[in-house]
Length: 291
Image (cartoon, rainbow, N blue to C red; front, side, top):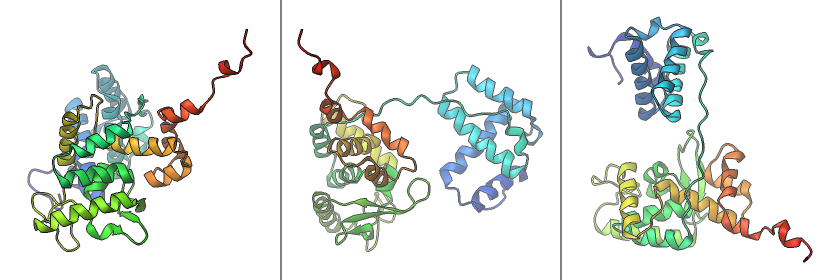
């Protein structure tokens, strides 16, 4: 994606270069290019000829054809970049607004379910990776990006480099998690998979890190093996981490920092699923005098 090829138009190459200049990751670049392709398919002409009314009609088209809110908003983000930055016509997007996305409550596992899930992981590498996701509240991509040198056993922290929002942060490293990581390191080292300063969770080729796809496949296999009926993903472990901390009465602002959330409102979602917190509240019905 770094140079113009015969299959890439000058306009698309300019957009690609604009994204590269801002160091957008490959996944974002793909989503943004796809957004412009959707618009072209609707217009049946070059996207730089679109008018504000064309863009408004395109959004109505997505709504009327049943496009999901996340896809609509992702598409609009890509188009906003294209018209604002690549074409320099920000005024064309004025009538285009993101749609509201219903936010369902996250699935949370009990402590017993978490223990069963981790124990059912396919091998020691995945058991350790799932332990990190739950024990430190990391996203799947953050687990995969960890290197051996990110473990600080003196300060009992995990260094998370370029997490969501391209921000670095430190995550907690408990004694139990440290021991599990050491156990995995011994196994991986004996297998010749752990390179000096390399990935904490290498893929089939030790030069490459484990992929989020491989990790998600492993957690689904573990959920089936553990007979957990809930809809489980890697992010479920992160949700469970936050909820269980809240139930232990950890300050929600501390949880916000550990999760790397930008806004406290995002972390506050877990108050709706922290059942131990709900149980601790006395219903006013209980305080009424007996009849």
